[in-house]
Length: 390
Image 1: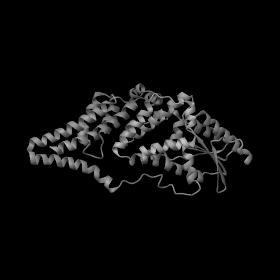
Image 2: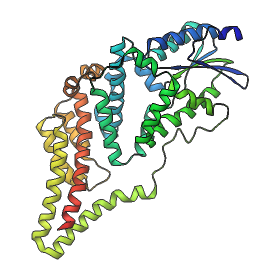
Image 3: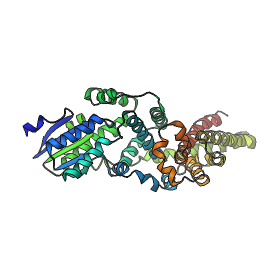
Image 4: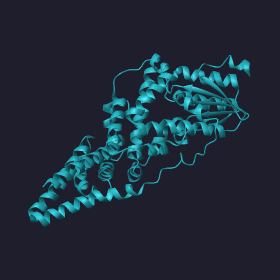
């Protein structure tokens, strides 16, 4: 075994664990060198199992490019998954743009691991947590303004014109730089770092502990390696990391307190100032929430009926926590301009530039949902103090 270590790349870390020998290959997700490192490690180790940092949905998304065509946009809106799908598209676009600059397919090192498993007869293990669970755990622990800030950061990452060279990508594989990068993100979004990185370090390590075979090669992003090494020696339950935290009692109550407070303010206006002041309060609520929701929808350049639906829906839906104005405007946009199969197939290319991005009907529908909700929420915060001050 010692002889084999001479042929391992520097990105591979050996771990002895309860009768297993695990080689963790830390990679950059867009790197030609990482692909070579994976293949070299597999050739040297000849593993029983190859584990890759993917969940089943992400793996299928890489190996089945046509999977987008089966997306039901109406179902996405009704289930409240528009923001999650849009966030996935934004992240994919960032890696796709880097991949085009470096002439490497995003996720190529993961695909290389899967290909090696097929070529060698090793068992393939998908050891990452499901992407929808990860994103929902991140989302539930962010406040409204943190969500808006995150959306802005993702949009900036997608449309920035700054190019990243091969040297910069390979430099990211150095653990000290990656840890510093994650530390900066942790300062801006501590809840994101905990759910997106720290929890997955533990999850990946525990899934590796449970992986079959005596000799295992694991292909993971280099930033996960230090955290995995800290937690891999100790067995930990995964039930909590695989579940969504139940909403607190306060989180169930406060969404109803806002509409109750608004209605109370309007009723108080009728009682204290008469019909004129009460009607003025209603006009403020309708005008502010409706206008800002409509302006939010208009940012996505939708059909005029979509903008009108946002204006009409917002004053009502902002008083009902179970319904969002964006759902209404998104469904209207999907009904007026239903996306074709070709629009779904064109999603990867649509994420490469702002012009293609905004012109793709699927993306436009998702944007309508998100921007309408943001506009309506801002309208709520503006209208309440305005009515109260009168």
